Image (cartoon, rainbow, N blue to C red; front, side, top):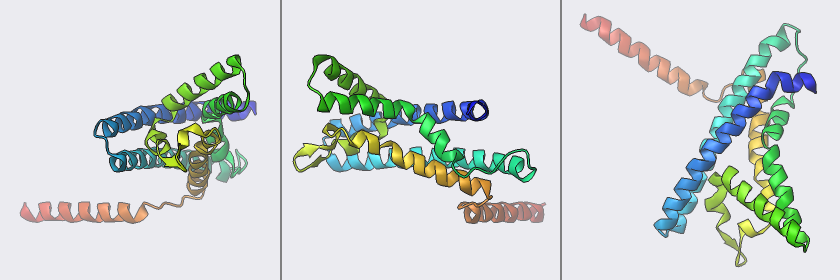
Length: 198
């Protein structure tokens, strides 16, 4: 466990900072959509912020898996397919802690625990700002953000994407290889055109 944190503590911090930055971005978009008083715009901007966040996670965790691939192939490190999952879980530990606070504040009737729930709700809003637009939607007349269990669901996409991306990097499998080939081919044609003009 000590070796794990030593090897991946920087990656966990970077993942957390990516989340925080995207949360501020998503929260700003939700506020702008709120001023426009458009639920459709609010949902679209929230989904866009979530997808952007997951894409950042994907590229970052893919790189970690690819980096580990060299160590695994040289025999310096054992292959662990759950590494991406564990990194994301650690990076989302504050989200899960806030979810516990919200749950306790919802199910226990106590002023002190209620304050804990409020702290958790505020912290979750700050760290999960990209989901604010989606959570404002009502299901059965009750907004999603009033259900305590939703805050345990929110980190799941990030953990799943990180787990998948790490393994793809570990096996050097790219979904963007077709796009990269197209870009390289276009660049090659452009260089050939330049040579002809000379």
